[in-house]
Image (tube, rainbow, N blue to C red; front, side, top):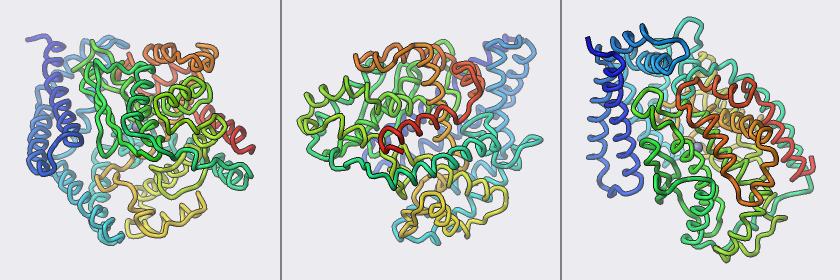
Length: 498
Ligand code: ZN
């Protein structure tokens, strides 16, 4: 009988390759595909997904994983591979082909219905498709749940393996309790950032040159990555040596491009730091969306919005981009730390962002606990916004129809954004304890020590540890909301005097 480990690597390698081909096609679709290529591209993607699915459910793969399990020493890389492979196979093999196909069809219809409902600003047009998606997700949660799981645990597990709804509820509860009064106090503060400071003339080429320069200085390797324009900023990696970032540009406001690129570069630094030796095995990928998001938010917010970073960056920005010459530290920094309630999550500032996540998490959890029906969502949404942020949407597009996630059947995704914030803050605090005065380094444009610390404690481990273990080992304590809330309080004191 052949060596099961070699066989596992051969089988898994093909599956990983197929995933990378699919992401490459998606990247191309967003950046280069001609407008009318959509139908042909959908066909290619469906074929690839079918081939990949067949390889995952093939009995030989499951048998090979179990043969590997018999010889895996506890704590070894092989044991971690078996754990990851079993987790992924559990999800794939428990779902019947009928349910998998029904989910894919419902997501395609859901997306169309959502777009039509947005065009008409009318939730009723989306409601039947959303009811179907929720029913299928409830069925899926029932099939995949293990003893002791709540339905929401199962949904969350797809994006944040091992996370429990009860923990997420506790962390988000902390944030709601502490952030809502800070936001209210900031709204009554006499200090307000001047929004006009960010507007001016910022030519596309100058913005690109500056942001590329900063990303490179952070450590993003353009020999192993690239940056292209697309309607939405994102990052996709096909192994550490080929990582693609996208950006979009507003020539009258420099913030979307710069902070978008710094955010995606943070994702890209993680992808470029994943362990080369474990590529094409179950341990080669990022461990969870929350950890991935922690890397983007750390570079975007904790580095890219810090006063010390701007002491290094502002003169450079002004040199590259004449529109930036009117900016001063005094006008710029309050603007980068604003805390103003708003209705749209993707445009929300750092001070209020997590409250948007709280609303979605609570609604989703109620939906899957059977306490809320889809028909009640628009009213529940508006009431939650009024209670949490003190605002009411004028129409459904600024309310319950604003996010794309539910239209694709992605339930349990939103909490990963806030987990990213919590993990980033906890890692940043740990790095600061170990590396000393990071501000002194940032002022000199030195970001490599921080990157090396993240490489050592996060990136190089791939999926060897679970996200929970990884965070605890890197920061010396289990994940909590404490470090992140300390940052929020410090910002409110510094910029709003509250
Ligand atoms: Zn992100």
